[in-house]
Image (tube, rainbow, N blue to C red; front, side, top):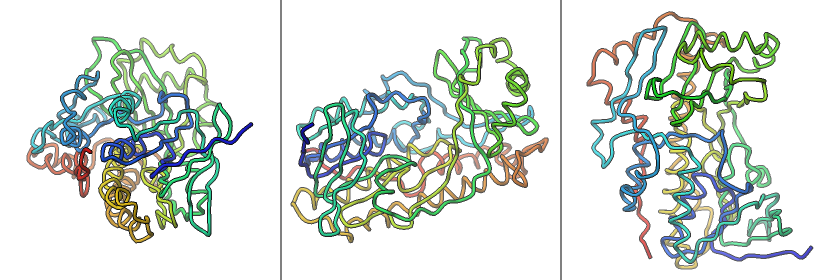
Length: 407
């Protein structure tokens, strides 16, 4: 089968939040870009749903917020959970001084489709679906493109720079032989859905119940459920039987008890292996990794999608001028992205590790404490203190702003 070839300014491997946002911003600035997505569509159950205030502010800066909020979603002004029937409110987003001070819940495929609809308005944007990047093209030690498999045969895409946004199992970073440093994670997640009724609580919330932890994401017609387990503990749960698992879920979230029969087999339950890692160096000659490809996040706080988007904005801000001027993208330029974004990613990862080791788990096992930690109880009792977690979670560390122009 004949080899197809594309030439562009920026080749982006991965059509997730980082890849689509970067492609959109560069195309908007008048730069040719090709985004390669290995799947046929954006529909994936395991993608995060939380659109943080920082991302909503970026939509405002792009002039898209009003239209974006027409996409079906739910809004949360506060963030809290139930700890053995002890209600805790940790964050109050309403005091953030931004255009829309809420946390929005929107299926990630809807977010990606929205970005695509606006990106394709620019002539320089090209999205290739069913394009699985399998290798890098190197010339004289520099990455000059990628090789992908597609339904139409092999495809080569060559560009002035390649950006890996292909997630925590990144082929790009593997082929580039970038060193990955991992942090120990004592938890995994079981992922499943249960029908939602109008009489159910309206908000997404988490429940801690004597060593059991579950988070429920409101997807309107159903709950997307994340049940936290000890690392490697899925076999033990399966050996105890599906009936016993349903009974446990009913204890943690009693209002779901009348419909847990919807979990008819273990095929209805997916295991998500949780990792926290980061690249020692995010780049090599001609190539840069961002998002989960550079720093895989825990699902704690739902911050992964927003960090990826922040990475994309910073990358576009740094790369667009040299790309427009046809200047070589040197390691010194790529290093600027890592210098800008490594600190925020590492701070959030350390916060996630602290939460998982001291709140969710204790001594390597799920925490069986009967009441929340003292610091959380203090924050819950003093509303003014809830502004601090709201800013940390909602806006992140070193929030980015759109500096790229619209060509």
